[in-house]
Image 1 (cartoon, one colour):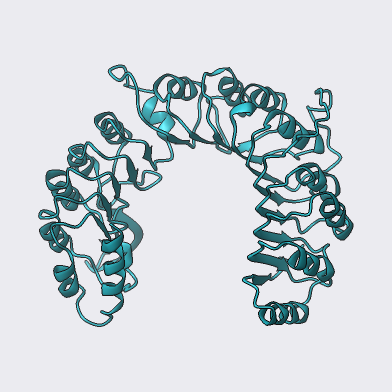
Image 2: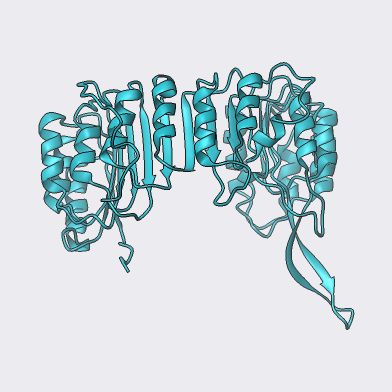
Length: 448
């Protein structure tokens, strides 16, 4: 597979003007184990004709990985399902086309709609590839206007027919597995994404997906079925023990605290995009309940930092091991109390490799904060840092470069404290010292 990919890249790079079906016809052979159209799609004017791909794919019985990103059609999937039974990974993101209609003068014009070419018919043929472990597809279902479309029923039938399937990139998998699954005992799914979570979906995941490793729940802006707090409570009461958890558009409330108390010990990665202000108590709660956490990503909206929190009465205790396993910290949003949050997260994080801080509204100077952290934890394992805040000076950036020996990537925001001239001089010094370090200067977004 490695040789296939190397030859593919080299072959695609040497043909820029001629019809790519000529080199592809020579390159695609029956013993290939991997083929990706993405390598050849650097030529935007070239159209991968379905007939040509069908003709080649019916001979390629040894394929294990096949990427048909934005060229996939039902006809191609018929050829794949009939001939490529060794596939373990496939990308079936649909080909796109324009919808044309006619006006009163019977003249065709662009209706500003897209049509798709993969439907339940194509998914039916894909069921024959029973070794599939990963299916990458359109993440949401589109209107069938002007073309064909997949349905939840078609996706459900595909999932039920693939005994080794671990990951299918459809964003409403909760709906898929929560209905008409009475004839299924277990699914091998390790990844599950649900953009319309319900308590029944959580129950179904706990019953059917005992191997689940990664759960992403994205609560919609408006829902009349249930509340976000009910989802958090259902997840806390379930038997799910996922090491990777993403919670998008959920409040940081008592139900969230109970979830962390019951499941935090199993978490290795946690991402929370909160609808509330994330207080210092909330961050402390994460640290004391998720002692094995390696990756933490928090994002909060622009809210009043003095607003009351439902966690004010929640019992916290001090621990010297808080965040001691942290490898990656990502803070995004507005009005972070960085003077308290950063030390809480980083003082014990001896293995930290990536730090990403975005807060353009921060008014407090961050130099003293970073100096305090570095005096206790010198960040010797730090490889990547992105300080997108106006309140940090070039002196601190220079200190990080000099004292973090593994640092290879850095980005800062242009401000009164860090100018483009200073960054240019810093890059020159890095070049003179022959350091393997890339420094990027990011243009600041307007505060208004």
